[in-house]
Image (cartoon, rainbow, N blue to C red):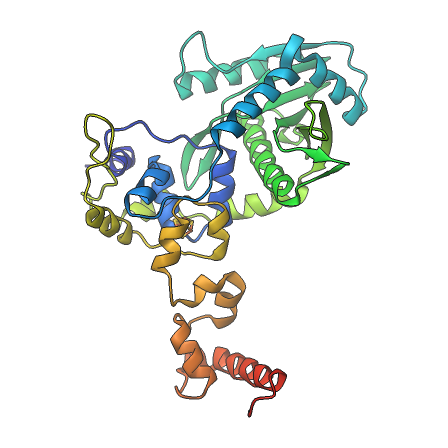
Length: 372
Ligand code: SF4
C-alpha cells in the first residue's frame, strides 16, 4: 500500500521538498478551497519552477537585493547579543529587562534535519527558566495543516519574559515618518499570527498554558531610509481568528490525494545542468488533474497565479470571491450575461442569481442612459 508520504514524494519527484514557512501557510489559508495548492505545497513541489516550465513564470518574489538587505539588517539588529533588539523590546513592551539569555536554534550541533531542530527547540523552550527574559532565535516550529504536521522554516525570534511569550519578526521594509506600506504590514501580521498559533500548539504539547503566547507581536523594521531599527507592537487577534477558522476548514491531505492518479507527478526531470526536460504539455496536463480555485487574490500570493488565471478565463470565480459568492451556481461569465439579458431561462438553482444579474443590468443601463 502506498502511504501518504510516498504519494507526496512521487508528486514532487526526486528533489528536496520546498519547505513551508509562515508566508506559505498564510497563503494556503487565504484560499482553503484550492486543492491544487494544498496538494503541491504538502508535497513540497517547487511551484515557481513548474509555473516557469508551463510558460507562466511568477512575476514576483524576493530579489537577491532584498534578501541581502534583510540579512544585513537582521545581523545588525541581533549584533552584540541582540543589544539593539533588547533596547527596542524594553521600549515597545514597556518592560524592565536588565539582561536576557539567548539561544540560537538555527541548527542542532550541525544537524539541519527539521525533526532534530524541532526537538531541540522543544527541549530548550521547556527547560528555559520562567523568570527573567530569554530570546529563542530561529526556533523550528510545527503546525498541523490538512491533517499533516508541517515544519515552519523559522524566520522569527520568540521572546519569553516572566512566562509570557512574544513573537518578534525582523522585516526589511521601511517605516517612513511613522508609516509603513499597509499591505506589507498586513502580510507580516498574518505571518506572525501563524507563528503565534504554532508556538501555542507547542506549549499545549508541553502541557503548558498556550494562552501564555501573547496576541501582541513585535515587528522590527528600518526607519526612514536608514538602517536605524524601530519596533512596533501589532495586535494580531483578528488574524488569529481568521487563520484558526481557515486551518480548520482545510481538507485533509489524504482526502485530496484519494482521487488522484498514483502515477501523477510534477517531476521536472532535470538534465545534468539542472534544466527541466519534462515536456510542457505533460506538466500542463498534470496540473489539470488537480482542481484549482483561482481568484484575483492568488496574484499576490501564489507562484502559479498567472497559469491559473489563464486557465480560469471565462469563469465567474476569476472575477473574485464576492462575485462568485453572489452568483452561486452560475459558473461561466457567458451564462451570467445570457441570464442578465433574459436570453437564457434560469434553472431552479440559478433563479436567485438571475434576479441579481437582471437587476444589475437594469441599473447599469439606467446609469448609462441606455434602454432598459
Ligand atoms: S494560483 Fe492556482 S494553485 Fe495557487 S492558490 Fe490560486 S488557484 Fe490555487
